[in-house]
Image: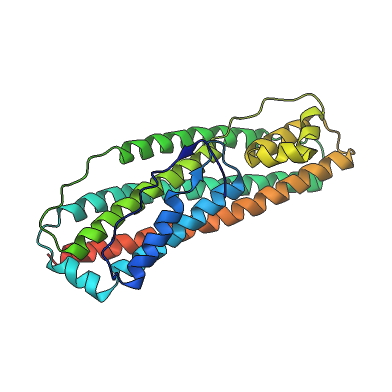
Length: 283
């Protein structure tokens, strides 16, 4: 996975001895992400790995919540203020997840539109529509990061006089929310990559061919660089156009994987929220 200068809190969650295997699984998946170094300049691969890892965490969380012993313990818990806290955060996090997924999907569609334009290669190879969307995506992503930071700094409800298992579930739910915020911040930092300015001829695109440069570049920025050359590229410059097409195909594949991962998380969030709503209804 990716490396970086910043880490998530690597404190392991402390669960009771002889825990149910489902609880042990969520502990293991959480600790994998908690010791993972999140990149300040993430690549598509790092984003995908983070999204997949978070999806596994939510899958395990669903397994824990739906255990008969968990459902019984939660239904018998008298003080459910903590459920209201988690439900309130979950609906906002669900909204952020859905909007992020939409941005990824829309970017992928913009890439497809540019690919269609290149295949036709008739007239002006204008990318004004792509550029306009990139500006919107960058703005929306930054707004979502601000919303995540606000969510991350909210106070939590004190939990007292609860069953040991309920205490563990509450702690894990909060840990999952915290790590989810970190993963989505990385995704949104990736989406809000700086918009490249117009370049001279093929100079910067030549840098993209260099292996060392490719290893460290944000794929969205690399698309910007490649596409900005089209304004200076004639319809008959096949080698350059083919290079851009290859770049777009690769990035489209990356975004397809990321979108699928986000869609999986979105569905897991809905299921988790549904389970907690059922807990409240048993009060």
